[in-house]
Image (cartoon, rainbow over all chains, first blue to last red; front, side, top):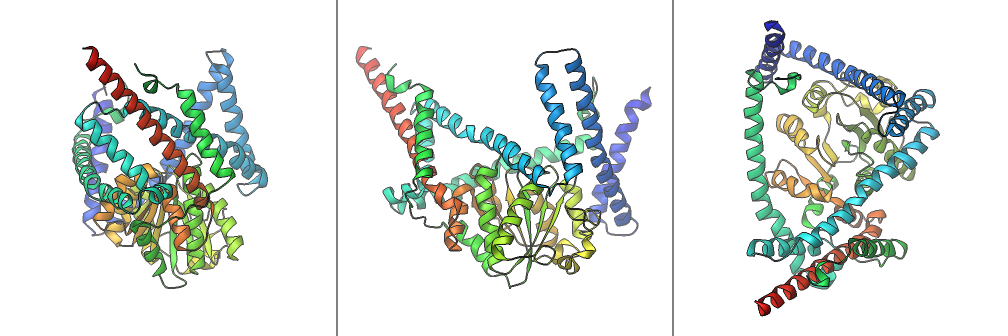
Length: 210
Length: 278
């Protein structure tokens, strides 16, 4: 059964190296083959949705049948999934019914969830931003300056100096810090990619001990 | 512990709700002075010749719509006002972005008297990864779209698509981004190989991450959240929802600042009392 472990690693290695090389070497048949590989990927990705939907249906149907924990939520999920799918297929995505559901149910629910962040952020800021140390004081002052600098009321109260300072904080210290984080993440991503290509990182293959 | 340090969060929520709701019902009409980043985005769009074709990438879903819809509307209004033509697309992962594009483009196209197929086209969304789709679109725009638009119409039947065969035929890409995939994918797979100018906007929380890319010149301009949208409305002289909402945002942030100050006064009083006792 050794091949079951080795074959996916070999496929990953071959496909990965081929795609990387074809980005740099534009000599036929590499670009054509790379294009074909891209098309295979698009077809696979589209088909993954069908598999995902089938798996989701199976899991939630089992839960509803066995009256498992919170089974009514599974029922709601199945009704929404197939109801919206049927609507899209029958009245098309341009239909008023489809648009109504999108705007008044999906949009309203997702928007409401996202909007709650404002309240949680306000509560978290109130409890966390205490001037316990020099670093905490700098953090709080910076947050206050950026907040005031970005609102018209703040400009009216504090004049042009605060917006200028807020812009400087975003342009200079923020950019410097963000660049460091981004460069570190990029090096990490590169290292992980090489590990995957060499078969040292196997989490993407799934299963125990992958 | 001082009472100012432990104000019930429900009181904070209520005050914040009132502070945000009141200006929405009775706007103050605070004046907005556009910032340098917003002016840069406006300048890039303003300098495009009339009739140029621009791609607008709707990379967000209804969750971020309350913050990003006003920006999308302001940018689309500006583009149509300058007689630019628009192709919309949503990166893989933002399947609901195509719906946002459909809704906003239809609304603004009616306002500005623009026609589908001639002045704008919605390419919709495709499953996959941006690392594959965007390079494929750079070679041939139609192939990854299977030759059809969002509504299943063949792209060969749409007049606007006669001139646009691949991404390099575009004069500008405008993105409205709320996460990943977003501007980083466009920088890696479109800007760097093709050097097509890239501007756009993100949620306010995404702005600090976008700043280094703007400083490096990879993003020609970037807008941040509702403030960015309000700036564009002022610069384009087309007041809209963002300017109204800025009043609510102003008061909401001032309430948060007020609670920060109260919490810290309470903290200092407690520390001072502790110091006296000690």
